[in-house]
Length: 327
Image (cartoon, rainbow, N blue to C red; front, side, top):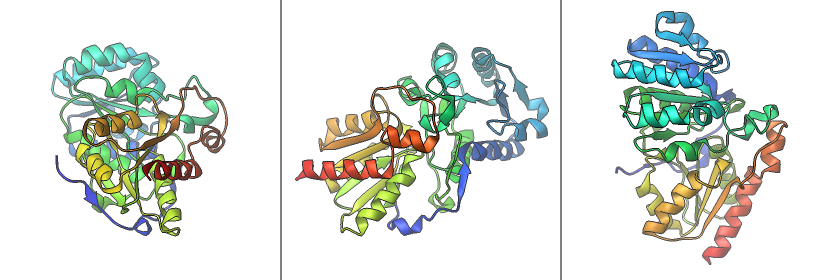
């Protein structure tokens, strides 16, 4: 595996404002459809929520509105892929993975078909819709499937780059993004390569490995500790599977302690994946920021992130703990 990008300085990543990642998905799908006539869209009655109406309006002949029939949607996508098309099937994360797991396992992954499962409204940041819709187990469900690639971009711009990469990627893939506006800070010049992390901040004392909305919070923590003289390496692990093993091993070797951060259950998500790599190669103290084996609840996104300990302050607390264990 190639080395990850190395980009020093958290100041290189100011926010350009808050934009929903789902908007990045919709815009990138439209751009992909203009360039590649094999790109096809399918959605289960959530077209506006995923901004797939942009694709539908310009390419109605390549779009299928399945209605509230997610299992049928995945089966249709598998059929389209078998004919050489590149289907992007979109729904909320709780429906796109949990409701249709059997179809994904049998029709997509077992058959190695080129279906992209695109899931919006994941995690606690879904907010007021509550525990039944706040999918916190989807990364684990998808990374456990043979042949599946799992991608969790950090912001609007990276979501657009992820879609472009997935158009060229052959095989089953899961793309996870969210509902609310979040800081847009990533840079086009960083590129996007599936399976290759991006180092956003250099540091030799501890490494924070984050995905999705937690990447920005990891950068915030790095900026705070930089003023205290603590060097925090920040890795944007946008691909959970295949995970960037080389970057993880190098971070463990260089810094001697790791903190993971994800808007997902700590069980079976990014933290588990990182711990597995370290356990096989270079055991170091690892602390995990994530949901601790519980369901969510209804509330504002910011309130929920605070209650379930998914804030910058919680990352800082785990960094201090990891440093104490290191020494």
